[in-house]
Length: 59
Image (cartoon, rainbow, N blue to C red; front, side):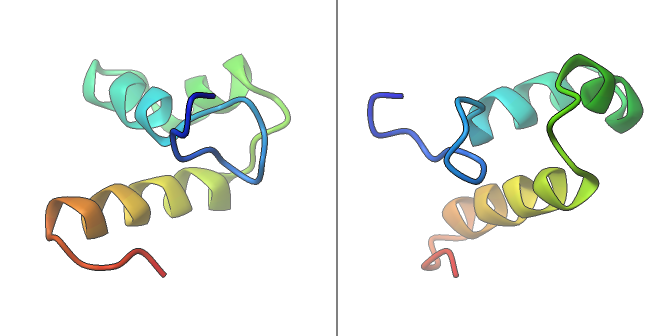
Protein backbone atom coordinates (compact mmCIF):
# COMPACT_ATOMS: atom_id res chain seq x y z
CA UNK A 1 0.00 0.00 0.00
CA UNK A 2 2.85 2.35 -0.78
CA UNK A 3 4.25 2.48 2.75
CA UNK A 4 0.98 3.62 4.30
CA UNK A 5 0.05 2.28 7.72
CA UNK A 6 -2.27 -0.71 7.30
CA UNK A 7 -4.49 -2.58 9.70
CA UNK A 8 -3.05 -5.99 10.63
CA UNK A 9 -1.24 -6.24 7.30
CA UNK A 10 -4.50 -6.04 5.35
CA UNK A 11 -5.09 -3.72 2.41
CA UNK A 12 -7.05 -1.34 4.61
CA UNK A 13 -5.12 1.77 5.58
CA UNK A 14 -5.40 3.93 8.66
CA UNK A 15 -6.24 6.80 6.30
CA UNK A 16 -9.15 4.88 4.78
CA UNK A 17 -10.62 4.23 8.21
CA UNK A 18 -10.15 7.75 9.54
CA UNK A 19 -11.36 9.25 6.28
CA UNK A 20 -14.55 7.22 6.30
CA UNK A 21 -15.24 8.09 9.94
CA UNK A 22 -14.52 11.77 9.29
CA UNK A 23 -16.95 11.78 6.37
CA UNK A 24 -19.75 10.58 8.64
CA UNK A 25 -19.57 6.81 8.26
CA UNK A 26 -20.50 5.11 11.52
CA UNK A 27 -18.35 2.36 12.99
CA UNK A 28 -21.02 -0.28 12.35
CA UNK A 29 -21.24 0.84 8.71
CA UNK A 30 -17.48 0.65 8.38
CA UNK A 31 -17.52 -2.89 9.75
CA UNK A 32 -20.27 -3.79 7.27
CA UNK A 33 -18.17 -2.42 4.37
CA UNK A 34 -15.12 -4.37 5.57
CA UNK A 35 -16.47 -7.49 7.34
CA UNK A 36 -12.97 -8.80 8.02
CA UNK A 37 -12.25 -5.79 10.25
CA UNK A 38 -12.93 -5.83 13.96
CA UNK A 39 -13.83 -3.01 16.31
CA UNK A 40 -10.33 -3.21 17.80
CA UNK A 41 -8.92 -2.52 14.32
CA UNK A 42 -10.84 0.75 14.18
CA UNK A 43 -9.64 1.69 17.66
CA UNK A 44 -6.04 0.85 16.74
CA UNK A 45 -6.28 2.97 13.58
CA UNK A 46 -7.61 5.92 15.56
CA UNK A 47 -4.91 5.48 18.19
CA UNK A 48 -2.22 5.37 15.50
CA UNK A 49 -3.57 8.51 13.81
CA UNK A 50 -3.74 10.31 17.17
CA UNK A 51 -0.11 9.50 17.91
CA UNK A 52 0.94 10.87 14.53
CA UNK A 53 -1.01 14.08 15.00
CA UNK A 54 0.48 14.53 18.47
CA UNK A 55 3.93 13.81 17.02
CA UNK A 56 4.51 10.81 19.26
CA UNK A 57 5.86 7.43 18.25
CA UNK A 58 2.95 5.08 17.53
CA UNK A 59 3.21 2.07 19.84
